[in-house]
Image (cartoon, rainbow, N blue to C red; front, side, top):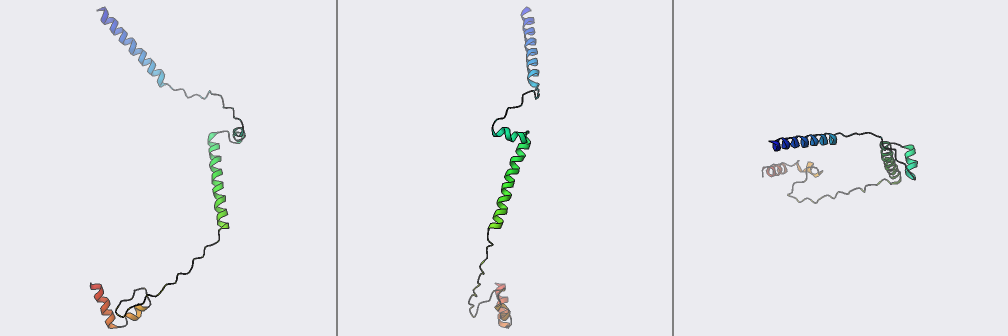
Length: 126
């Protein structure tokens, strides 16, 4: 009987210790009691103007955006307009029995003949 009481007491004590240890680990204290870092060199100069991290990040992004805009403006003024060479469309030689293209000027003259209209209709039926 004494062993069962000692065993149960030891089990309860272990469970209490585990519960206390778990509850202490679960508590996170998010205090800001840490001292501010001491900046040196260029960081000290920059942090004089932008003390918070989000301000520094915005300043860096703004600097990159400004450089991008300056590059785009410079390239817009310095590049010469590109002239496109006129493309000469060569007229394809049409054979006597061929149907000219619908977009060509010869198509209007092609439709004036009844024979040519019948050729066109037959070509649609194929």
